[in-house]
Every structure is written in structure tokens, then in C-alpha cells.
Image 1 (cartoon, rainbow, N blue to C red):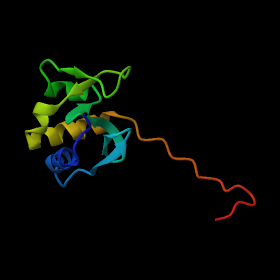
Image 2 (cartoon, rainbow, N blue to C red):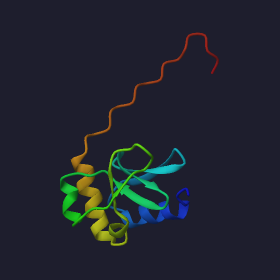
Image 3 (cartoon, one colour):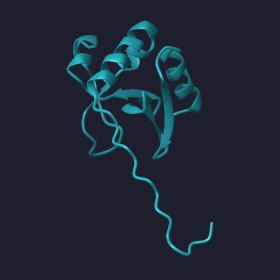
Length: 115
């Protein structure tokens, strides 16, 4: 079951206006970005976040989920999403704990290629 666009919109809405949060379609599901860092995924209408030491304080005993077979462990944050202020704090500390995204390489034009 793929994630509904309405669920993705709900998650972004819960993140609030103070964080730069967006979702992007990826492999039929959604990647969740904060400040252009992938902090997790929305899969099957569930919110999966990358585990970080800073984020551990938001979970007593985190449920583990996987965005796709063979993926690393992610924390299921469905309960936290329901509490907007707590979810916003979790997103903030998770994004701060992750490295900055690598700069994209500029596309090079092939000589003689038509625009």
C-alpha cells in the first residue's frame, strides 16, 4: 500500500511553518526532508525516521521499521507525529544530527547535443 498524498500533507502540516520541511516522491513513497536533509521516509502511511542519538530521548522503546526490504533500521514515529510540538522538536534534533547533503554535480552538456 503506497502512502496517500493526504498523509504526506498531514505530516508536513504537523511539522509546522518554522522548519523547512518538504516531502519528495521517491520509489512510489515519500522522502521526508528538513533543510534539504533526508531525515526519514513516509511509507505505507507510516513515518520512519533515521535513528540518531539526539532523537532517542523522544522514544522509550522505539519500534523499528524499514522503508523497503533490506533497508537499515528506522524508527517508527507515528505516535510522535500526532503531537505537533514534540514532532517538530524531533525533526529539529534529527536534522541537526545528520550531515549536510552532498552538493550535486553540475550536469555537463554533451558536445553537439541538441537542446
